[in-house]
Amino acid sequence: MSLLRRPPVWVALLSAAALFAVAVVGLGLVRAAFYEAPGVPAGDPVAAAEAPAQVEAGRCGTLPVSAPRELRGMWLTTVYNIDFPSRPGLPQDQVKTEYLKWLDLAVAKHHNAIFVHVRPSGDAFWPSAYAPWSNWLTGKLDGSDPGWDPMAFMVGEAHARNLEFHAWFNPYRGTQFAPSGAGTDLTKLPADHPLVVHPEWRIAHPAGAKGRFYYDPGNPEARRFVEDAMLEAVQKYDVDGVHFDDFFYPYPGDGGGADFPDGASYAKYGNGRNRADWRRENVNTLVREMKQRIAEIKPWVKFGISPFGIWRNGGEGSDTKGLESYSAIYADTRKWVREGWLDYIVPQLYWTIGFDKADYAKVLPWWAKTVKGTGVQLYIGIADYRIGEKGDWSDPAQIDKQLTLNDRYGVQGQVHYNAKQIRADRLGAVTRYTARHYAAPALLPPMSRLPASPPAAPRITGATRDAGGRITLTTAAASGGASWALYRTGEKDATLIATGRAGTPVVDPKPPAGPVTYCLSGLDRSANEGPLSSPFITAG
Figure 1 (cartoon, rainbow, N blue to C red):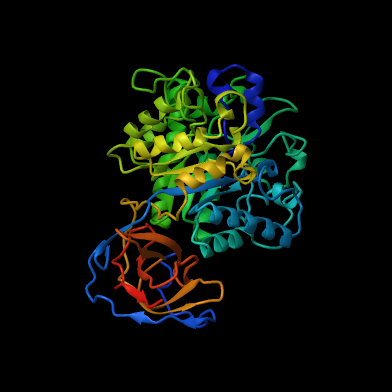
Figure 2: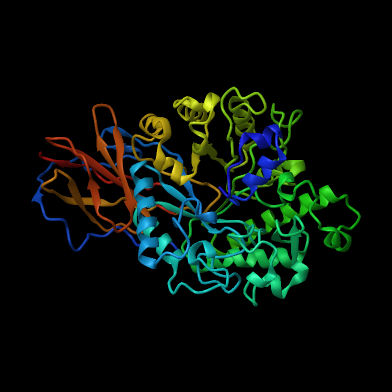
């Protein structure tokens, strides 16, 4: 994903060429309360039987309620048009149509979040005062305005489907490789591009025609500018999360064997530290400041990072023998968790169970132990893109088995890379793990470190059944909810059958024949659930 997903050859360090090849893939406020919709879908009224008046927390009448609590998401990659848009320069209507199809896929797979690549390389998928328009959208490197606001559309449509929208940024990459990107050719950039106006902020790496520009992580002014550029989106749009992948300092293979040429900033700002420690502290500062500044602007917005899956090998690290994010890309991922600078972390565990260099079954417990007691939620980056490769990835049950392990270790969610591979469903693997792990909707895990304001209980006032058998419920107002959750009773409990954004119709898409008992709850933006409604019983 951001670009993401690093193949296991990186871990094994088998090929600098492979490293380089993969590296090009660079990877408001509380909403309206429940209301009675002015236009209830046409259908026959469903009689309501007598219902108990008492409302007990966590119960629908006499039955306990049950709902999965996990984040389920996918990365929608824009750089090189890997996922979206399908090609640069498409008309507005086609871009919108394509995006809605990705949301349809997410809903069909019972996902509840989408991670959209809105700053892949120093650019923007919104009208920005800090960055040019992305050429992956416009088809042009000159910053031409497409004449519409994709970010506003994308956030709004995701929320209409009750999907969290995590804005995915690449902080430091300023350009991508030529010829699709500008490379290190300043003449291909707009005259007002920050890296043209501020040459002291830019570093070309590697040198020559095969390089790209970076914002210098060691230059405090450049770092602050990069933060401002990303925070602009937080200020302007109703995003639910700010998300980074693992591109801070370049991976070793990104420079063709050459070290990152940051000597000038090191000489000016190094203050006698060795260069590795200085680089790590530069990344730490970015992470720490982003968390602080997001909280100051919109304290309900989540901040998370998806790093390479190995912090360090052995000792206090994991039982692995691969590339270390700590030393190779100066990302002290464990420190970020321990210091509470993140709300969630999504390590990219792109290896199979049993892989000798980095066994999924050994790396996962290390991460589970690392986050324990910190309040930082652990999601796992899942390598759907590797399904169908030779060896263990030829087993269509591989990801199914990984998700089973995740459940065993208390993982609070998964993000899948990448969207196109979910749609492709190679070997039927996506269908398999969806049936076994995502068969029903899920609520997001509540995040205790964020503001909490669980809403009062809503009230179901009536129901209609349409010609297709769907039951639509009408509700009386209950203040403060961002979304709703609908439960239907069975023999032993009441299970979650549907969710939606506050103000959208409350619908049971596949009700059984005969009498049905429902309870409805509201949730705040941090997924804290309020009390359930009194049961509403249809007479069949």
